[in-house]
Image (tube, rainbow, N blue to C red; front, side, top):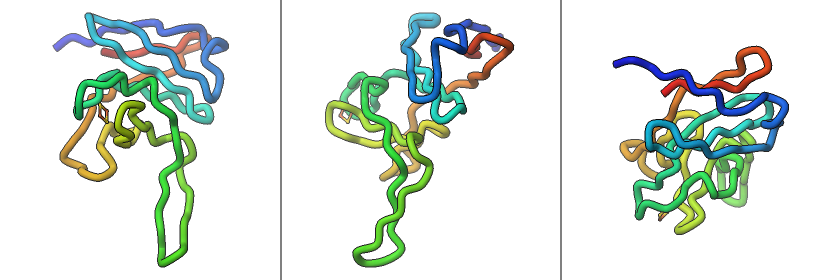
Length: 118
Ligand code: FES
């Protein structure tokens, strides 16, 4: 299958913390800049088809014991705005069930542009 190269935006328009949803080949894809690293994920929640990319980004919260809480990977967890299911931006996997996954895409900065490969 052939890969399509799609220019998302000038890199200056997607600084850390920014996101943009684009439509490529009929699919809405959210592109996120998390502390300088770009991620791209389908804007479709597998639970009830919610607009996943409109959700908040959060850290991964772990616990090493009772009353213990650690925060890791700031901004790399995407929470669906409809019913709060959480997905890993890097892999698309649902946090509660690794078998459930949203499609992710390769995205990179090339020169002054952010480019998506679909
Ligand atoms: S539609 Fe996303 S959690 Fe329900």
